[in-house]
Amino acid sequence: MIETMNPLLAFGLPSGPDMIVISILVLVLFGAKKLPVFARSLGRSMGEFRKAKEEFESELNSAADESYKAPEKRIETPKVAEANSVKQESAAPAKAD
Image (cartoon, rainbow, N blue to C red; front, side):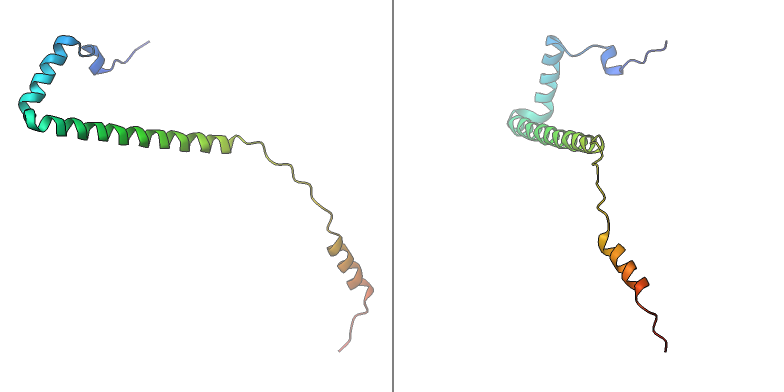
């Protein structure tokens, strides 16, 4: 059986020393003054993505629930009014012009 491996997991997740190097690179690239703004915008973006994901999942769940509902049993009522009108039409004499 052939297994596919995610290339990001081939190297492993970043650990302590890796995170230190990444944080130093971010500090150098963005600067100390822009770092809080960057972190704030990153947090807002993650919140919006999480909210969109939850909305999407709830839409999927509601659509799945609707598709699995048992069909309603409908009781057809006899059409007495139509039966009476047919009897009346056949009993009435045809008019000649």
